[in-house]
Structures are given as C-alpha cells and as structure tokens.
Length: 182
Image 1 (cartoon, rainbow, N blue to C red):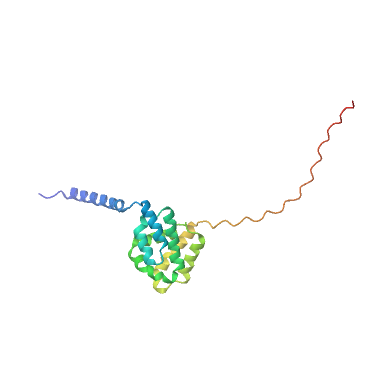
Image 2 (tube, rainbow, N blue to C red):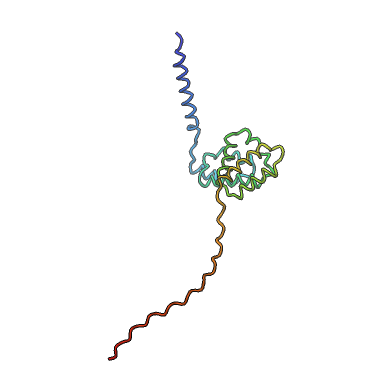
C-alpha cells in the first residue's frame, strides 16, 4: 500500500503551518516584576555594544514602559556617545537579525526627539568609518524614516503678547434722579 500522497502533503503542510505560528508564541517570554527591575539595572549599566546586545537578549521581553525608555536612552548613548566604537556593533548587527531589526525600528519609529535623530543622521552621513558603510547606510535610512514620521520638536515659548492699547476712559455712571424735597 502506498500512502495517499495528496493527503500526506496536506497534513505535513498543516503541521508546518501550526508549528510556524506556535513557535513565536512559545518563544515569547513574559516580563515579571523581577525581570523588569533587573532589566532596568542591566540597561543602566550598558557601556559597550557587547553589553547592549547581551542586555537586549536577556531582557528584550521587558521592552515596554520604563524599560523601553531606558533601552532607547542606552541605544542613543551607544550610537551618539560612543560613535568611535561603532565597529563593535558589526558582529551582532550582521548575525542577529532580530537585534538589527529592533535597533532600526527603534530609530525609525518616529518616537525619538528630532535632535537625537539629527545626531544619528549626521554621524552616519559625515563620520562613517569606511569599514562600517553598510551599518551606517541602514542607520541613516532609519534616522531619515524617523524624521519623516517625526516626533514634533518641543514647542517654542510663546512670543510675548503685544502691549494692549490703553483702555478708553469709562463712561460716567448715570446720576441718580433728584430726591423730592420734603
């Protein structure tokens, strides 16, 4: 007896499809309060691209709320503040696709202040080491996309109001009718 080939293929396709959708759900980890507290401490200690990558791998599942803000600050600190060390990003940026996508999404999200996006844009355009051209191009495109989505710049202080014109003198109050003489 030969197996029914079309039924076998259909069953294999269904199994593959189920596994494809189940794997990410299984892989998603919830962020406990302890994880969130540890994430915040770890993110505060990010001083190199190696520690950035490790912290993201260990606590990326906590990338919401306060931890998300800290991740963003750490990412900007690494890009802008440690630009001369951008070559240290290459290995993880090239080999860890979800990490690369996270970095690019964070920059292109439109959630970063315009000044920070301008810094990333300028560094990638004007100070890119030749050996890091690919990374610079991707970061540059992400910064441009972020600028297009744009978080509005902080509002400028309102201009002082023009002095008001002098008020017209008030009309005299009507006088009361004379009282009858008694």
